Structure formats: C-alpha cells, structure tokens
Amino acid sequence: MTQQEAEQFLFAEVGLLDKRDYQGWRDLFAAEGVYWVPVNDTEADPQLNCSVIYAGAAQLDDRLERATSSYFWADQPAIKSVHTVSNVSVVAGKNTDEITLLANQVVYLFRDNDQRRDQGLEILPASSEYRLNRIDQSWRIGLKKLNFLQADGYLPLLPAFV
Amino acid sequence: MNRPSFDGLSQAEANHIQLYSDPQMFELELEQIFYSTWVYIAHESEVPEVGDFKTTFIGRMPVILTRGEDQKINVLINRCTHRGSTVCAEERGNRQQFVCPYHAWTFNLDGGLDGVGLPSGYNDGEIDYDVLSLQTVDRWDSYRGFIFATLSATARPFEQNIGEAKKYIDYYCDLSPTGEITVGKTGIYKQKYQGNWKIQLEGSVEGYHVWHTHKNAVDVMAREVPLMKEYPRLPVKAFDLGYGHNVIENYTLTDEQVFERWPKEFVDTLIAAHGVERAMNALRHRFNLVLFPNFALLEYHVRVIRPMAVDQTEVRTYHTSLVGAPAEMNQRRVREHEFFYGPAGFGGPDDYVIFDRIQRGYQASSAEWVLFNRGYKSEQTDPDGIRSGQHTQETQQRAPYYEYRRLMSISGDENRLAEFLPHAGKQQEVSG
Image 1 (cartoon, rainbow over the protein chains, first blue to last red):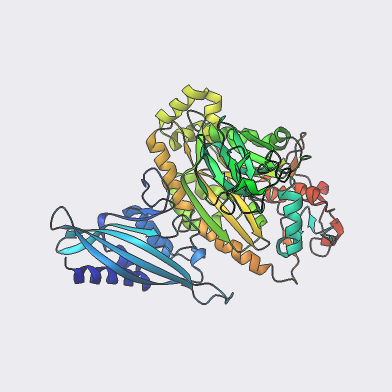
Image 2 (image 1 turned 45 degrees about the vertical axis):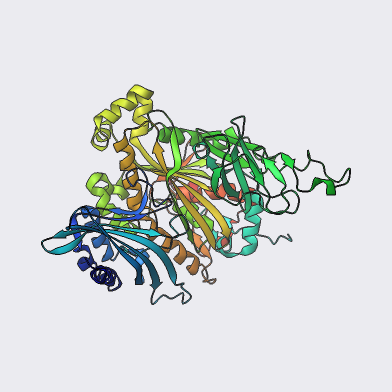
C-alpha cells in the first residue's frame, strides 16, 4: 500500500463516519475485525480492563442498531462529527496481505439543533492504529484502535461510532 | 452564611426545584452534608502498597489517601500548612514524601512535617514542626475495604451509619471466592454532567426508567438474561435502609436461575469458599445500593458522585474485579460493564444526557416541584422501620431526603403541596 493509498483509505473511512453512513463504515471491517477505543491506560490489556468501546462483529452489529434507534437519547439531537487525519505512516505487515497504518486524528463533535444554544464543540485529539487485511483484492479493517488524548480524563458522550 | 429559610422545600413526596438550582442551597449542602456526615472516599485496593497514594475530594476539599510505612491508611488534607498549595498534584502514584512545590515543605506519608526549605531563615519559636503537619481526617473507617470518612466529630458512629447496608456489601464481595475485590484497577470512567448531584443520587436506584430509557440496552441484555424483558413486572422491591441509604433489587434469581446465569464450576467454587448460604446469596441478588450522600454500588462498579457546583457533578465509575475468580468470569464482568457504561455505552450516556436535560428543565421556575410520590400510599414499613415499595415505585428516591432534611435542619410542610398533590401526606389512609 502506498502512502497515498493509505491516506485515501483513512480519509474514506472517517468520511463514512462524518456522513453517518454507519452501514458503509461497518462493511469495511473484516469478519474478525475489532473496533477498540481504550479508556485510562491505552496500552492496557482489553481482556482484563474496560474500554470505552471494545467491539467484535456482534457488538458492531448491536451498535449499528443503536445508531439508528429512536431510543438512543444521548444522540438526540444527533451528534455530528468532522474527522481530520494526519501524520499517516505505513508499516509493512508479516506478508503483503497485511499492513499497519498509524495516524493522528482530531475528532470534532457538535450536537446540532439543540435548544440550549450554548452547546460546546468537543475536540478530541487521538492517535490511531489500523491493522488492515487484504481480502478478495480489497483492504478490510482487522483492528481500528483510537487512543484519545483524554482517555484518562473527561470524555464527552459519544456517537455510536467515532 | 446568612441563612435563608428553606423550610418546607423538601417533603416526603416532592422536592422544590430550589434544592437543585439554588447556589446558596448547594453551599449549605457542602457544610451540612458533605462536611458533616460519612462520605465515601476510596477502596483499600486502590492503595495496596506502602507509599501508594490516591487523591480525591471530600466535598470541595482536596484529600490524599496514603498507605503509610506501618501499612496503615492515612487520610490527609492536601494543603500545605504554610501558604496553601496542594502538596500532591497527581491522582495516584507511589512516593515516600510530599514536597510542596513552593518552598519545599516536606511531609511524610502520615502527614508529618519532615522539613522546610531554608530553615535557618526561621528564628526560634517561628516554626513548630509538630503543629504544622498536614491536617488529617481522623474519623475514617472501612467495611470490606470500602473507606468512608467524616470531617465531623459528632456524626453518628460508623457502624451505626452503615447499618443495614452491610448485608448488601457482603452479597457483593462474596461473589469473589476470596471475598476480596479490586476497585478501579480494571477501568474508571470519568464523566461530568451539567446538573445537580442529587439527580445522580436519585438516578442510581431508578427502577421506573429502565424499560423506556434503556430499551436499546435491555434488548441486548435480554439475550443473556431473558428476565430483563420482564423487568418492570418482576416481583422485586426497593428499600429505604435508613440514614438516607437505599437499595433497589434488580432481580433475585431462584436456585434454578442461578445455574442458568453462572457456570456450575463457579457456583461450586463459591460454595466451597463461603458455604451454601453466603454463596447463593451472592449469586442470587442483583441490586443497586446507594449510601448517602455520594456512593453507589452496582453490579460491576462503584459509583462516586462528586458535587462541583449546584449545576455541575462529576461521576466516576470504578469497575470492580473479583480477586481469585476465574479469568473468564472477570473478563465477562469487563465486557458486560463496558457494554452499558462509559461515554459510548448502551445505557449510561442516555442517563447523562437526561440529567443535563433535567437541570435545564429546572430553569422553569414556574413549575416548582420535583415529584417522587409514586407508590407512597402503598409503601410498607416493617417493624424495624424499613420502608419498602415495588422496585419501579419511588420509595428509594424518597429515602435520602429523610436524612437530608435532618442534616439540613429543614422541616417538612405537608400543606405546601396541597394544590398539586391533593392527597399528599395521607399515606396511612390507604391500605398497602
């Protein structure tokens, strides 16, 4: 994967989140793919420690359902997002069908159309790690890990996927 | 403070919004509740080794909890006795001394003053090392590792205060084969909401909202625990345990259901460790326990409520793990906890957005009363004075305010609600 291909992949991936095309975003994951947002210590073992999100296929599907549910009160009014991606580097994997991407991200969240009118803009800088697997000629996400700078501080209420 | 009268603003079946929105009320609560009764500060598992420390707060007051050289716990006020800087900036860590960044006044783990910067500048009689130790909170006590402290010399004895709640803390800790748990070692969610602290106090034992607010979560949970679908109709109760403490039973499993919920090997391990009765009690009972004013114990976590301002509250969710339990059991506790709680969980965020909205609603000064009269008329009182009601009723929301009114020296005035709740205060006329 070239630098440019890596950047295009990441831009497209976060673009789906910003468009709230969650089905499209979920379809990027490999069958065994894991979506991980740690809390507190971002290096802690997720099998022994809680995360903000630690989702395999079943949990991704549950989240997809929640994302469009009328009972997702924390998303009313809807939380809009903008992601920017930078500092992308490509790390070769064990073989040509596996690759790791490292990137920094800033996630901006804003609850639009809120009666309170003074709702704040949430700014969430993060480092991120993606492990991609090539399956049938296209790259699928084996792991997306998003390490918020505020992982051990206050985090705002988040949309179903971030 | 020149105290206005708050009489009549808290009543058996309703609170006035002033309790939740008046900054003067909030200041009075700090003095008369948070600085006057027992508050939760930490769990012993957070400072296991000599030199371990954790900083936290009693009301607004910054405190440091340390494990001293003698293995004993010290509760210190985090304020240099010279010019007032905190002597410890971190949340947690391990060290032998706390050195003030301003003039190098140096305190040991017991709070004793070991030395000061440039001591020769003090003349004889200008500095007394014995008097200038960090202030200590001497009244603290613990039950099964949960540490509570009070700044008051006259608060009722700890044993009396924790009283009826012990039974539930036993159920909770006995789910561990060793009887020990860790608190916060396996994850802490740190959140704030723009609302009064009592909204979370009431909301920690809220049986009425579950089926509606948490429909997303219940739909998923019901796959593992089918009786969650029946939650509003379960034959379980909530209790006022006295002194403001209260508990809601979420479900109580039969022997058969215990074996559906838990692997047989785990049940056997617990029975071998604790005997049948203790083990089955631990496996059977799921509840949310509130200890007034700032502590809740829920299935997988300890919740600590910190009042920051009349309309601002921090809530920390300390995940608990069972010491000596099989790894898969603790892993399951991790997955099930993070499923519901935290800033992207399936349940917790919906509560916090509602708490924000409640505080905004309280700006409507024309609508004065916050109601919790549901089930008041059918509430039962047993011979020991324990009040109880059905779990989706509001006995548990009413419970804190008996103690609240006592501590705040507010008298109830039943007549103030007459327009609104024509039958207010007539509990005795209706048979349960």
